[in-house]
Length: 248
Image (cartoon, rainbow, N blue to C red):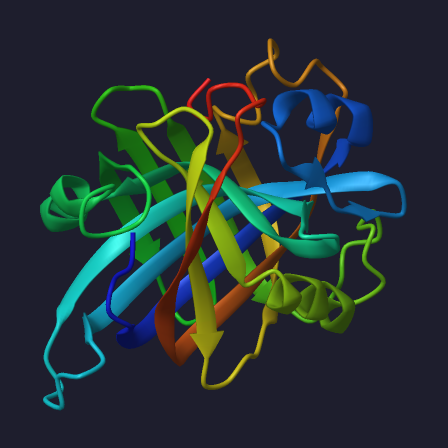
C-alpha cells in the first residue's frame, strides 16, 4: 500500500514505556521481528497521540482533520537483504475517528479499531483513557510533567530515552492478511520530549498474562511531546511466510 505523504501537527503525544523480559517478548512477536534490547530488556509501550490538521502534503491550505489515537508498539529489529533494520511493530491501533476506522487497512496502513476516548488535560497534568468498541483494548494513563527521571528506568536520562524512540520512527502495523505488515514512517520537523511522572497506568494488552506472565512487564518511563509539525510517509510493506498471524 502506498499513500500520499500526510502532514499535520502532533498536538500531544505521550509515549508510555515498559521494559519487558526479552524471552517473553520474543515469543509474543511474529516473524520477522525480534525485540530491540536495552540492557537486556525488550521495550514496549503505548503511544497516545492527538493529531490536528492532518491532510495530504500537496494541499497548501491549513485545513485538515483531527483525532485521538492509541497504538500499542514494541521496539524491534529485523533483517532485510542482509542488513539489520530497526523500528516498531504495532499489533494494535485504536482511534476515535470514524474516518480512520473505515480507511484503516484500505487508505491508511494498518487496521484502526474504533474506541471511545476520555481526556482531561492542563498544562502540566494529563489523563487519557480509552475503551475500544469491541472491548478488546482498555488503556488508562494519568501523569504530570516533572524534571525528575525515574530511578528504575533502563534509560539513563530523558535524552537517552528520547534518542532511542527517535531512531524507531519506522512502524509496521498488523493487517487483515496474516504475516503481512504495512509500513509508515514518522518524520518530525522538530523533536523534543519532556518527562511525564506517571501516577496510574493500565494496558489490557500488556496486562494479558497469557501473553505476558506476571512479573515479565514493568513500567519504565513516559515521555511527552507537544506542538510538533510532522509528516507520515508510506514505506514498503513486509511479508513473512513463516510467522504467526499478526492479529493473534
